[in-house]
Amino acid sequence: MFKRILVGLDGSPTSWNAVDYAFIIGQKFDLPVVGMHVIDERILDEGFLEDLAGVLGFNYYAGISAKLKEFFEEQSSVLLDEFLALGRERGVKVSSYQSVGKPYQIILSQADPEDLIVLGKKSHKPVSGFLLGSTTDIVARRSPCPVLVVSEEKRQIKKLCVGYDNSILAKKALDLAKEFARAFEGKIYVVHVGEEDFSSELGNEVQYINIHGIPEEKLVEYCRRENMDLLFMGAFSKGRVKELFLGSVTSFVMHHLNIPIFLVK
Image 1: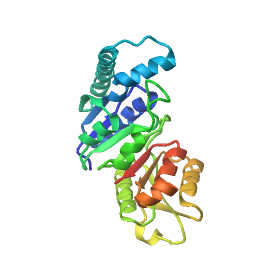
Image 2 (image 1 turned 135 degrees about the vertical axis):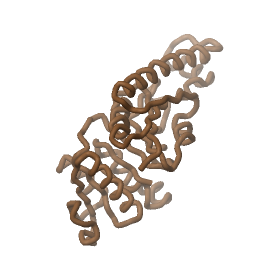
Image 3 (image 1 turned 30 degrees about the vertical axis):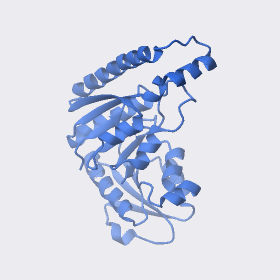
Image 4 (image 1 turned 45 degrees about the horizontal axis):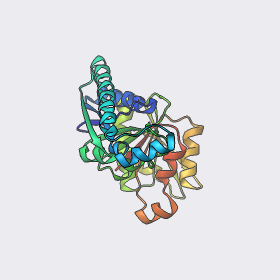
């Protein structure tokens, strides 16, 4: 299935929830889990810190970035030590990785197509409002491997929904969901929004649901109404131009649905 699991850890509640999911999946499929903590280089830039001092009213002095880097490295070591201890306690094969840079770039540079990346939906930022963009969003778009985006709420892996449009990515998502359903003794609900009927192609091991309407809205609505635990779907398959100007089903679902989402590449 996967070679290993890479999980982003920044100390936020959602990142610890991501760690929990990574451990659960690692245990079930006997996969090693790598905890990754990246110190964002942008908050160590002297020019940024000087501007920030003027905004927040603290005293700036040359070389403050070195002190901050030392502080963040200590915090990183504490986080990763806790991660390693928790993993060993739960019988998971764990290792850790610490670096400095742009978090999304470091995570992507370490990921192989055979890996699984697990990230929290909301990242913890040292200075809220100054660092724009979401590491999770960028990694989900650019990753060479599947990405599991985890929300704040913990759920059992029992009711598995698959957003289905008969595309190659949708079929890959369904195959992955079947593996999870067997491992976790779950049930699969295949949801297609559109006129076509694909029920005859999917077999008896899934429940097929055909809905009419706007795909992203109906998929979110169904998962909420039926209290799904996990959604599998193809990631960003409609083309870059449409994503840029109109958004995509993937983007809408990621930002409107508060359950774990498995994005298949």
